[in-house]
Amino acid sequence: MSIKLALLKSGESVISDAKELIADDKVCGYLFDKPHKVEYSQPLVLTEENEPPSGELQVTLSPWIVLTSDTNIPVPRDWIITIVEPLTIIKEMYEERIGMDND
Image (cartoon, rainbow, N blue to C red; front, side):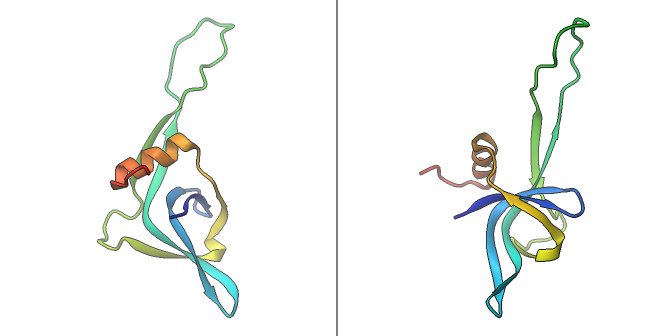
């Protein structure tokens, strides 16, 4: 299993088990298994004028395409800006969300 975080042209961040789709020995896209959209916001906190912000984020995961029963969704390569390794805490959150065991 290779859990990755993808940034799409739409601006969405999607976490999933990502596999390369290969045609003619070239990557033509990716297959996202159980993709979830990652959204985050910084909580609004009132502080003293000279205090720096806390840096905490509120992160939520939700199924990427809600109106489908498909769990494997192909995504063309040209729709992906980049694919990166997610932070450990986000990866664990995703694994818990989809019901994976942490081995």
